[in-house]
Image (cartoon, rainbow, N blue to C red):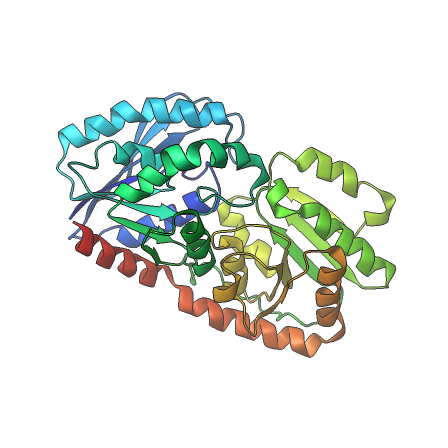
Length: 377
């Protein structure tokens, strides 16, 4: 099978969608029955060709990217316009069985234009599905009916990365048939620390992701303030970069948070396994997710999850964490307080987190996609 994959973000650019694509390619690498071309982006102008594996080439169309993990509208448009001739060139030079696009827009627009001669699969990732993302409301209103719906309707298959995202997508386009193939996690890279959660000392909390309004980081900061006022021995590490970084750093510079909250900026992927192992619990106040890669990585590292309700949570959290329906500092503080006070509960959840993560290996995800490709081509 010869496959063309599209993604407007790819490490080091972007977040979970690019990371998931990279992990999937690692599973496809070396397969004698599969040849893959990837068309994606680069953070500086130019065209770059990387040999990811013997059977995988990555074609990178560069733009002037101001921030690696935040896309401006002008940057999205610039990449789309520059990527289009490369997409057409790849179709002229190769005979593909199908196209797999990560994100319905902007990448889905490229294969929509050639749907008459080449079937395509779209992986819906979260931000490309109309919902509560405040920054993208204009795109949802303007592009939703005119662009998103036609792209979805011509696709040979639509895939959501969680049941919650599938439901959100179905509300947008009730006629769509949408499959669910979850994200995965590298169980070899992400492993628990030798010291299990539940030991003495402060409860070490971590949150990981883009510093954007959707993540509701101020809620977590206020949660820490409440816990500290009540004598809770907790520390929070915020890992990530984004548009709110300067504002959040000003907020936590207050004397109230000294020694309680640390912002590290973004960590490289190679640092993340050890970063998780240095903490006890992952906390999240995110308003919207597809399926959180950070939660999966934390679970594989033996960290229980305390989170607000969002897509993907139903699949990920059972006896390995606490989900709060009320996205307030007080509700999250009450959940964390249980783990501060009941270290045996923390230990049990830590063990359950690793076991739950074992059901989300990338090998199973890759096999699900290969089965889908066989049906589509």
